[in-house]
Length: 289
Image (cartoon, rainbow, N blue to C red; front, side, top):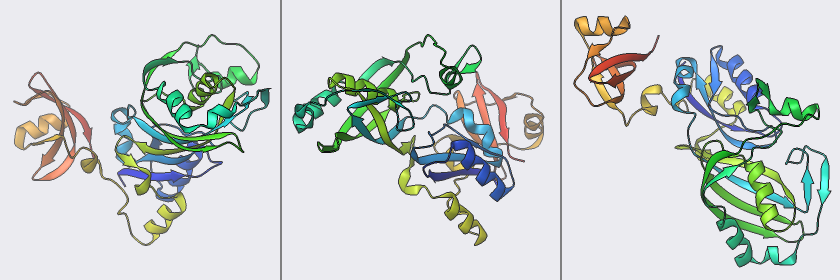
């Protein structure tokens, strides 16, 4: 079974948990293109079978999230799982719609962001959260990110919460963004809830739970699995035959008068994988078993 399935991850499961659950269902290789925190929900694209070999083309996707920012408290993990480090007053003006919208808009654009200490980024071969759990301090380097848009969804003065939607580049940490927004609002805060609604072109509307995926497969319904061919449907196609096909399958670069780029490869109109053209030479990239 090859392709991508869009899982709507539920709370209290790690991305690794979801991978293992699906692996047991299909009894094949499974991978993912980017983790979601255990307390986050939403779109988690899983790569099935041979599709695990195309992860390198899918990890740079832009993302979209719906977020609930809790104001007035700062936690060790920048989410509800951590211990409260600090409490501060929350000004009434924050819940004036025009004021809140103006502050959020200030975060649109390219910028540098310091990732949260509780993250899987590696420093000297160790993940940051390993340092954090031992109370060790680490010098964190800011990363280049881009916020494409932020839209205010709701203000709740009673609960001291701001609901917003954000479209951003790969590598953006919403927990850090929440803390930065709270600081700009002259208080502290943390990411209370997070739902990923979009990864590249993959939408939450097309995602299903692991339970639903298993149920459909038992009914021989694989309609939610996106084929490798479909994922690259906008790429050009190349038909191969004879000696050229044989050389290509053996890993030999073959002449191909095409522009540089990724191509879908076919034999007698049957999709067999992906190839890369560079300087008029076609190189095998993925061949479906």
